[in-house]
Length: 282
Image (cartoon, rainbow, N blue to C red; front, side, top):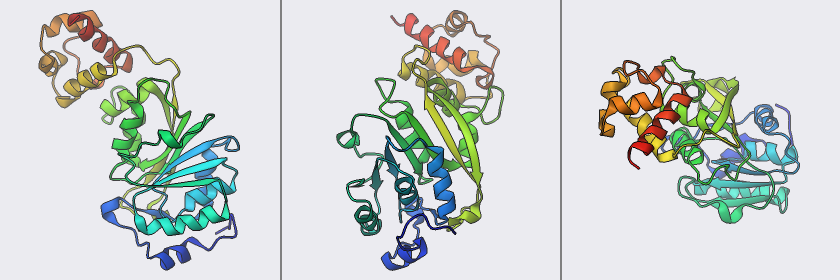
């Protein structure tokens, strides 16, 4: 394993601070600094960027980001055991690492954000990864405060994010992600790279925010996708009844076939449906 700095090896850091991974926190640590450096490079250019990192744990990715030139890293960590280990990194890179202790699902990161490029780069805790992504995809106003997301997910979740129309993985997450961003799977990481090894392969996903996504009310889009995919085996004429009103009229306004199913409808089609519901209730 190649060293990227003069700090102790991650296994030593974990042993010294009692940082055994906890399943309740969704922790799976990456100890190979070659891999953490590869993830960090996927977020380049770093020299002018402020990075928000979620769940840094013992700090493998944090170290890679700083060693490769990130202007500043804001690390949000819930596990109090990791804070002391991360403080050692802060001392090694004075003025370039801000530690925020708390739950990423509830921490308000805005007070820590400077002007200039900001991106989110993280090996996300698996148990909150999808919830965090949805929170970032549903920010208003849009475009958001970040210019890129570079995130680690279970491969199954990554496939749901990038899934195309007609795919079994295509669903609400794909529609939301592809409506507001351009997502792409960059590469996979085998379970053996993690401690403890998860039972599934992981994937690094890049999501680039669209400056001008198709115009529609975000809440209405969430509602129509929830109705359609909530009964994905049924035709739209049936699954959309929970929206109320004249379903056939809505589908006609949106230019959609009533006998289609949710997995057959493109992002553009769902946007048209969201617009139709807004017009019907205005």
